[in-house]
Image (tube, rainbow, N blue to C red; front, side, top):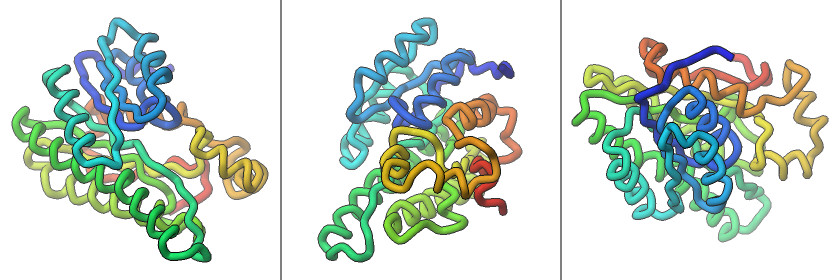
Length: 254
């Protein structure tokens, strides 16, 4: 394992109790970071994760990211507990189906909840993060996007694709707008990644369908993304600010 020193780094990761967020948080704590592990529903998983690395003094924080005040409280609670935040990793998201064949009310309900969690909460945390980073003379944002931004998504997931497109444009704008204030911003665009969120898709369509569209012999896992995120947190990739890095097993090559 390549060693990336994250000692003395304080990192907030949304959606860190499972999936990609959990993999990133676990790796960051292995590298010595103090991590604010955000969760919504799986408190036990979040607590088990931080308990693996007591020496880092990491802590768990609850928030329902579909609720504006919860998002604000999350940031304020982390800042109150840790005193500073060096990197904000905006990972939490939902991948909900809403076929164009469904009626408008059902379709719109999924659209609104997806945008609230995947984009609105990201915008709020970005604004709060910029305010904080300005005061401490610098910081980093890492946005977990999707290949769907660049190749499009199937008709059942229009809200998901739109939310990740907005997130990606926001991340690029942050990089261009605030670089002179020592604020950096990166996007990682995964393809299909083996997580709990993806299991329903696999159950519906079968793993073979997913494997057939990638160039490698196995699905991407959170562990394939974590070292790259840690490198961004370390400051060794600062001159790549604004970049989007694809990690999709060769399923979409730009």
